[in-house]
Image (cartoon, rainbow, N blue to C red):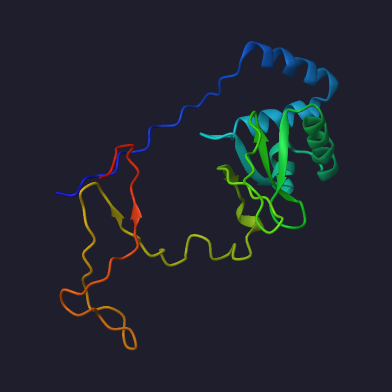
Length: 186
């Protein structure tokens, strides 16, 4: 019998903040109302992590403001240490907005430091080059997951030549994705 993946717990529809944050937010509202509005927009979308990846175009839509207003609001939020901005790509109009936690940077490799973090990503259909095809694409290939105590067993005809199936008993150990359950694997 195949073990079913546990369903993802339902997402709540509320965000919890501490009293001191609300008091600071009240001060921000008086100082820079659009920055406070943008902070609410970002905070409402962080999900299970502390970062949101979104374009300035979508921030304009979400706040009902101009690009310049969004940029000024972001400047205030960065200056007052509400958020940290990490650029995605070269032109700087799509960024990761990190709330609460600093991004962890790994050691140098060829003089470049890298960061790995998870984020909620907000993308709109009008920003996609294939926007008229969305919803009509062929489904992606499915990659199987191995569960605890399961082993890979190659089967099927294989690809056409020059690729050929393995000789019986000589099947290679195939790469696969695994399901992390938090349990120790032997």
